[in-house]
Image 1 (tube, rainbow, N blue to C red):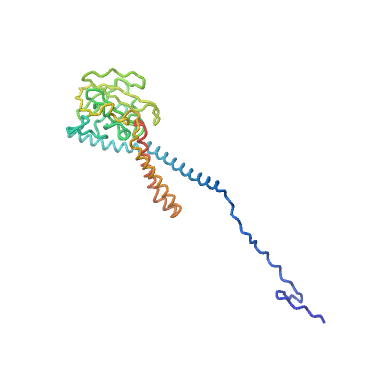
Image 2: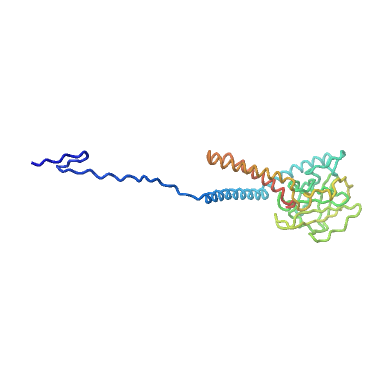
Length: 326
């Protein structure tokens, strides 16, 4: 008689046979995965490259906004300004209060941007209200009368400057005028008719000085391709109707602000561009924070209009630093 050995605790009896338990499953490795080490210098370089990329994108967007402003928005701004100026001058002409000098009876200087004349040149399709002052801001509204010269039609020499390309480019076709072409200027002293006597560039001889009782008008704009000026073109015209008395002039050429001369920039408002750029940076930071912390939809809704406004403000201030005849 054979006695079977006692069953172990985990043994199983199958048809009289003792089957040992399966081997235990291998234990998972207790070793922890060590994160990959990144050198500190490399991390800093990566962060710096990311910041540089963001700054580059922001600058590219600002340049694109500037191009869009100069090429599209500036024309709209010029058209709106011309409509308002034309209405104002028409009312003043009807009331007999249009300015004929640089100051009034109280010796108050005529402000920059005030309408002083209506210039019409049918040969080049031009009909523009002329404003007082020739810096970049004034020429954004239309052709400008240089403050140290007589008004068109008055005894002496009058200078009117206008842009070639930006803000409507009113003087873009000025070089198409030829000797003998006639055009008119309406001021507070009536309608004056001028006849072109020549077109000249840098180095060309100027016409003989005007004699007593004569009146000459010089139209000036930039020379060269649009937005790439490399000189000044001048059209000289003589008055063929009756000369009007010269109004009082308090500004002389030595006291004329540098920003009012040909191809000059107005740097007096550079501080405004600095604040506009700060506004753009604040909007950009706010948009990034909102995108990451709140959500992309909220960022788009809140900051697309604000971003467009900031870009337009920056472009508007940057244009003031460009040459006034651009």
